[in-house]
Each structure stands twice: as structure tokens, then as C-alpha cells.
Image (tube, rainbow, N blue to C red; front, side, top):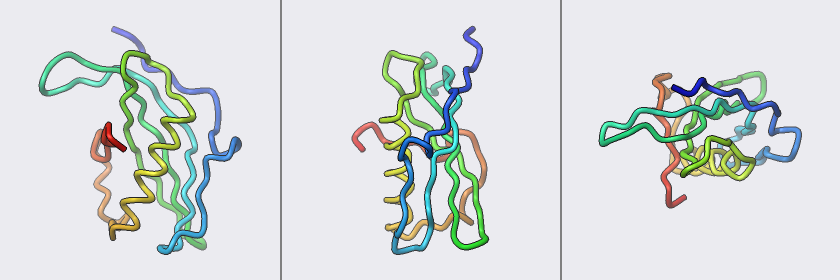
Length: 113
């Protein structure tokens, strides 16, 4: 079994940050953990759990958002951006960070996003 691999960069330092959203949240990707994730319908597949930080004034929330990587076990800046875009879309659609239940895989970016 492959050991989980922490990604060695803070993506917010390379521009993966969103501000000025209608909801008032600033969204930043802080780090990612790449691993093989079990699937109900078959074998494990590679992906990355991204630590997304939401800030609004002094309020800060941390959530995990999963992206699947196809055949590679490497989280990429493009995948991190997909995670940010997904959270931004959720917020635009009325999702509230208070609804996050901290379950692994709870928030997974759809492949078509």
C-alpha cells in the first residue's frame, strides 16, 4: 500500500486565492495530502485532499475538499484551483461552511468541474 504523501508547497503563495466573493469569504488552498482513496464501486484511486481555508473578518473555517487525479498520485496547482472553484461555486449557491460535517470525502469536486 502506498503511504500518503504531503505536498510540499503552500498554494496560496502561488496565486491560488480568491477574494471579493458575494458571501464575503476569502478562500485559500493551504496544503494537500495525496493518497489512494477507497471507492465503493471498485479499487482505490489516486486523489488529493486539499485543506481549504475560508476567512471572513476574524472568522476562519478549515475544510477538506477532495479531487481525483486520474492515474497519477500527484496533486497539482490545477487540481487545487479546481477545489477552490468548487468551494466558490458552493458558496455562490448558498452553501454555508457551518454545514460542513468534517467527514473524509464529504466535499468531492465533480470530474466535470
